[in-house]
Image 1: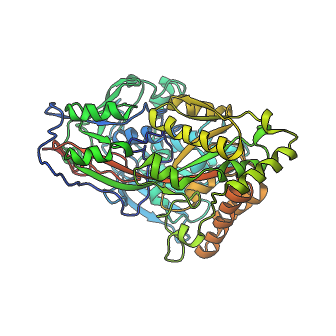
Image 2 (image 1 turned 90 degrees about the vertical axis):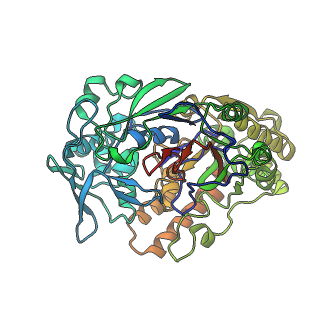
Image 3 (image 1 turned 135 degrees about the vertical axis):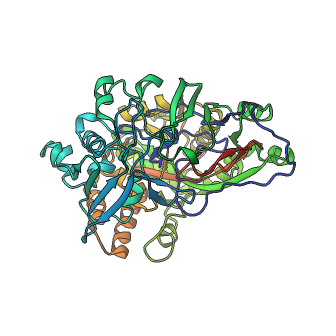
Length: 550
């Protein structure tokens, strides 16, 4: 997951969006100086850096990576990802798939309990899927459920009752899920937070507006429970002794800090106050010299400009093309980010699987372009078409408020000034506020990041369809919508890929509703105390695959 997920930029190892199953994850690192960093002193707890406050721990409404990192530890779903990012059964003890590949019938584990003492049953999944599929719920990520489940779109549109959604409890411990089309990555979906169960009794007693907002307002069923939550400071998880697989969970407590500043997290690590941090590009050489264990992985998060197409200043495709084309992404990756990030060739990262034995991006080729002369020409043409002059052109750039994000923003600001002769105002905000501002549409350009939910291009492309909850720029093109809809139904893998590639060229090149910038890589260090933590693109932190305190 993100997850699905929107991410907060912390170039200090950059916030990994939840990432791709391409074998890029690692569990070990090499140390020049063994024992140099013994870690925190707590005998029964490890401390790691989450970097930012989770925006939403309600699995029905969440859409960001930090929330997914916590939810993965405290909620058990039908499936979970193993250390190699492969979906394996969790609560689903037995799964049968219909001959047409659309219906999954799953027998659930018995004896699993919620933290409020209620049994976990098939009804919890039915309640969660029906709730996330209702328009009034306002889930920006609900589309991943209702657009895939039978009758889901009709339920969302109010044309059918939630009871007609393609999910049924055949009995307390038998769940039936029916998709509109056969989905090759269905088991990945079942391991994703939007497909987690929710205890109806707790959700309704606490209230949807308050659920999962504080430590005493969330009910869990996973390997850990939420023990403490001091907003914008830390979250502490404690092992759930009633977890069905508790004997395999070796670390009693995990504390997640929220350190925004790269220097603060580095100092905390050296002082033995934290056991794992991300390393920024500026800190790489220092970390190597000081003998820190460094591990890197390509997380397949993509970072891009999302333009608010409803704003007059950004309503013209030529202007949007110019704003993207003016950025020297090679210099950005080499001189600003410095963590191994690579220039984006499109919106779909380079290690996502394709249909013909190659990676998808390899077959597509590079659809981005850095060309300041062309950018200037397009910008002037676009201004003329909307009846505006450069001296009257005023826009703002929304980004996160941490030092790394603002460093990048300053780079973009200078590039636009140099190539286009305009001064763009920088608007930094805390991560949660940034998401809220995006959701309300009160921005001009936002610096956005996305992590894949499954290893397929669709996880990046469907969110730009008209009406999608993550289409914050309100991009709308019937041609694009048709390509995405047709690709969803297409069984032939090559034909499906051709449709997706055509859609990507449309949204990134011709319409330029988004402009891809780079694909992120993450480098982190771990103290000598912590061993076996899983970190990959899809799982930024996992402590249930054999992690232990040495």
